[in-house]
Amino acid sequence: MTIQLSSSESGTSPSLSLSLPPSTYAKLLPLSFLAAHLPETRPSGRSPSEFRQTTLHTGSLTHAHGSAVVRIGDTAVVCGVRGEILRASDTNIPDDFSGDDSERISTLGLLIPNVELSTGCNPAFLPGNAPGSTAQGLLQRLITLLKVGSVVGFEELCIYEDRSELIASDDKMQDEPEKREVRAYFTLYIDILFLSLSGSAFDTAWMALLAALKDTKLPTARWDRDSEGALCDPRPENYKKLRVQRFPVALSWAVFSETKSKLNVVLVDADDFEESCCDEGGLIVMDIDQTTGQELLLRVEKYGGGVVAIAEMKTILSIASKRWKEWDALLKGR
Image (cartoon, rainbow, N blue to C red; front, side):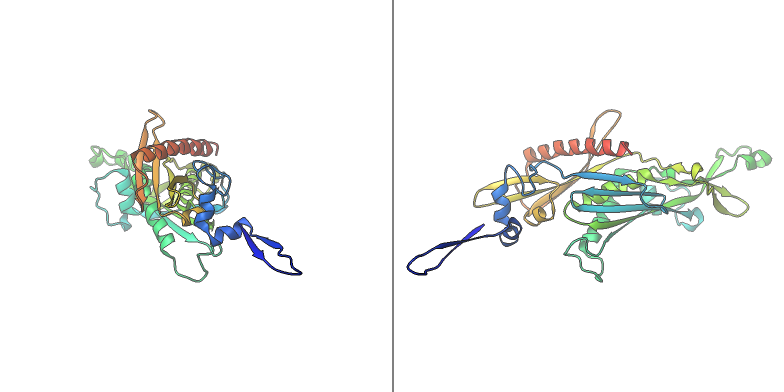
């Protein structure tokens, strides 16, 4: 951006040029600044369908049963998983409760996420304030997707009492069909902390959660009839790896619209500046069946505007499928 200033001295009128750096131009005229780069590239040099650099590290927290650090561009999230014992007798769930794995886990509250935005992760979040709508909104969406996505099976979290010896020693129990009875559960507390936030908040938080669950190893536990409690083997070599049965991947997108030039561009993995310039956006959560290769659409969110129609949505779905394959390769490498 250049501003021309005129002055008159000794009969001459020199022209003084004042140039502003791009960062200042972006603050003064954000919409014009973004429109000047699109539709081919963004201010960062990425194309509209290009993702920022993504990194993943697991096992970073020593005292957690599972942990992961995910970074997408300048957004960084650390997630830790800690398992605690919940006695079946302390729940109000009837023995004949029926439902699929997701309903049982949700009803018993066996997966408990928490989201915290650390001080300094973004200029919009000041220290000392109560959790805002951003953290609460992210938390509610994570809870919903944990239920819809069926990420963890119910059996993975059950602690049984082996009744085979008791049945064998009691003639009156010989006809008992069940040799194992659920007496306790593992409750997984999933703590998500944003170290830095610059766009794609839900995508990063969800992938950190998935990677931490995949990294989780729980102690081998059994129910002790004498002490009426669960006994856990403290030896790490006997820990059992938690089986994550599905890997749904989230893709956030935004639409930049400029009326004057009739510009409408769909941006995936938008950063903080790009999100502030967009009035329309959404989220797609997709999984792919690794046996059949069938694409499974688990969740679709959309807000604002009316630019994205069926044709644009098909393009976004194609990008989401590509993103799933990238994340699948990254998670399998851990």
